[in-house]
Image 1: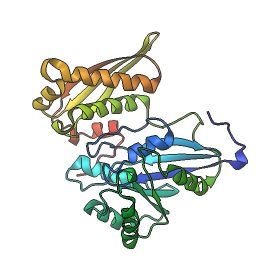
Image 2: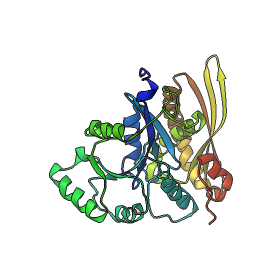
Image 3: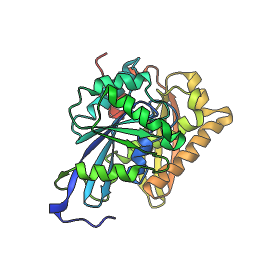
Amino acid sequence: MTDRPEQEAMRAGFVALMGPTNAGKSTLLNRLVGSKVAIVSHKVQTTRALVRGIAIFEETQVVFVDTPGLFKPKRRLDRAMVDTAWSGARDAECVCFVIDARKGLSDIVEDALLQLRDVHQPKWLVLNKIDDMDQSELLPLIAAINEKLPFDETFPVSALTGEGCDVFIEALRRTMKPGPWLYPEDQLSDVPMRMLAAELTREKLYERLHEELPYVSHVVTEDWKTTPKGHRIEQTIYVERDSQKKIVLGKGGQTIKWISMNARKAISKAVDAPVHLFLFVKVRPNWASDPERYNEMGLDFPAQ
């Protein structure tokens, strides 16, 4: 735990992490916070709602807002996620636009740069995954992006290895405004534990099935009881069709057993206590058109 500084020296503020899907925003968030507060998957559109991760760097508390990845929305759930991403920039001291440096100026990046022109907060460019590319390609990429939209600061980093993160953190410390911390010093996130537990299970669901299961599958923590022996948790995995339920269960129930075992380990680590996890799979056709499901995910239900 960090020794609490005198209030006169304290600084605090919000930083929005935005960018295309699979740019590594959630991995970067977990790196900066120093703990797992956002799930990570190779599957696109993994992050759905705003996830706030809280980090303390000496006298400064930074609240990182991890937003859903930017992509071209095709249906209601897509639109809700993209709208939520842009809403994450409203109250931030600065907006960090995170891209996969290896992919360069994709169509999604170019579209997002056009929309970022309407964001009035300071804008920082964060080039992630530089550990996996030729460093000679960085300067031309930085110049090309800044030609389309000038950024106030540019930071090449690797969320995976931590390269460049110290420079990024120091710049954040200088940018936050003087004032008291916004959260208790031992709090790492504002995500309710029931929701984080559901997200950890969804992460294992994607990890096991990836291409086999549409990203619209959804996990809900239905019941949570604390006993002297640990936590007894019941969760339901919702899918849209019977064929998807069969995929999640697997032959002889082997897939759901794997998901349950690995999700239990992840949740147990998060709560620092034994966990007894019970998973159920239910078919709920067109759940992605149900306003109540959006509320469960922390998303606003789009009008259409």
